Length: 73
Image (cartoon, rainbow, N blue to C red; front, side, top):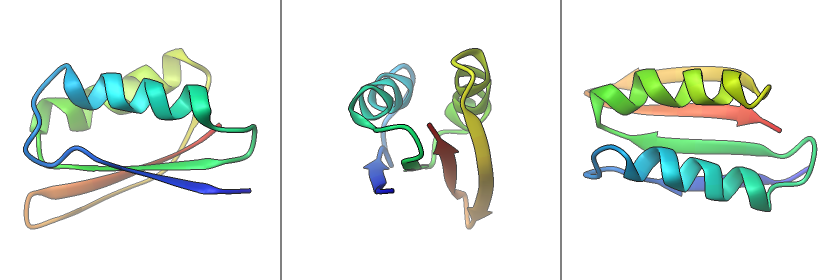
């Protein structure tokens, strides 16, 4: 199992979502994708997109306006 890091701080929609999808395509089943960003809309959209792709959101953490969402493929 690998962990894939995607840093989209400073990016606005749809870039974080596009980068998340790219990482999901590269990931193997069981891999964890950790997306870090600071765009409020993306913080809502990424878990919804993960849900639509039948992926598990394992954690959402936020500190000082920067969030990290972990998704397992």
